[in-house]
Every structure is written in structure tokens, then in C-alpha cells.
Length: 246
Image 1 (tube, one colour):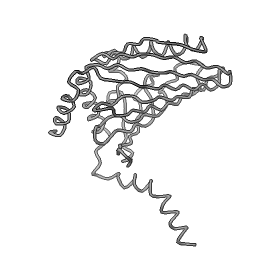
Image 2 (cartoon, one colour):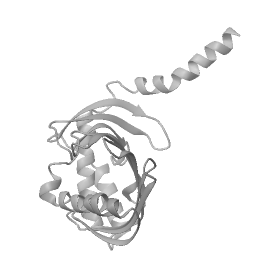
Image 3 (spheres, one colour):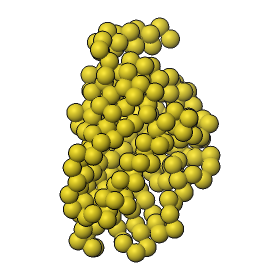
């Protein structure tokens, strides 16, 4: 019986041990990981020469028995600026007009290069703390992020960065500042996946707790994302070779 209890304790502690064991001098600092992530993102942006994709927004409020759905085409310029075209809308019209359409307008405005610098995941906007190495199919660095100012476009939480590509795999947290007086709390999870040689968003899930409307769930699905680069395979080879030499 004692052996079974001991085995259970060991198995329970394994994930924590794997994470803490990675927190040694062999790990890069959080700042080093983020700096390389920014560099890689810049290289990938040059190679893609922009992108195109489709998003599906689904907003649900069970308390009010309301639902809104929107299908959107997005086109990204080579400088990162985003353009949206609404393909279809269904359901809760007030949410479509005052929530989903406003989200598209805000994202388009903040995607411009001069505005994006104020929200970029970098040392100008955030403080970073290395949590450790998370072992999985693709190992990632877990890093806590803390905004340097109260801004509704910044967030406090944690990011996971791929150890091979130095690409953002997951981001989770809360806005550094509530976007409105009516909002009590917002929590979100963004996930990304690798397609070919590039990383694109996979899903966004957020929960908003508001004073009047209660809980509202928003899910965004991203699909059919493709780079505009004509020499896709050649660009990947150049990127890989360039970073192997660093």
C-alpha cells in the first residue's frame, strides 16, 4: 500500500518537477526569448508579403438567450495593417452593430504600424518573467507578462513561445484596463498553429462579465489563412538558414 501511495505522489509531482527542473541557467531569459520572437515575427512578416483568411465570430449570452454570428474575410498588408470584409451576419443585431462591428473597426485601426508599436509584445510595453519550459509535442517557454501602463489594449497574463521557431503559441490573460464602465471582468485565450512555414491564429475564446448583461462568451475561429508570398518554399528555406547562422 505504501508503494502505491508513493507512486501516486511521484506521478502527481512529475509535471511540476519537469517545469522547475527546467528553471536553471541553461534557459534563456524571458527578455531574450521575447527579443528573438520579435525578430522572427519581423522576418516572417517580410516573407509572407501579407496574408488572407476567414474568421467566424460567435457571440452568445445565455442569460438573455441571445446569439450573434458573423463571417468575415480578413486581408493583411505586408506592413501588418488589417482590412475586413463582412461576408454574412446572423442573429442578435444589436451585438453585431455595437460589439462585433466595433471590434473589427478597432482591430483595423490598431493594426496600423504606428499604432501597433504601442501594443506589441516587447520590452517597451511589457515586463517579462520566465516561468519555465513546458514539455509537449512542441516545447514552449512559459513567460508571465505584465503591462507597463494601464491600457485597455494591453494585457496581463502569460504567453507560451515555441522553443524552435520562437513563435507565439498561446496567450492568456485579462486586459490591463477594463474597456468600459459596464465591464466587470474579461478573460481571454488566444491560440496559434503552424501552417507550412508560418504561424497563424487558430482560435480566440473570451468571457466577459458585464454589470447589466451578465456573462457573454465570444469565440473566434480562424481558417483558410494563407500568405501572399509567391516564393513560399524558398522564403522558408532562407529564414531557416538565416537563423541557424545566428
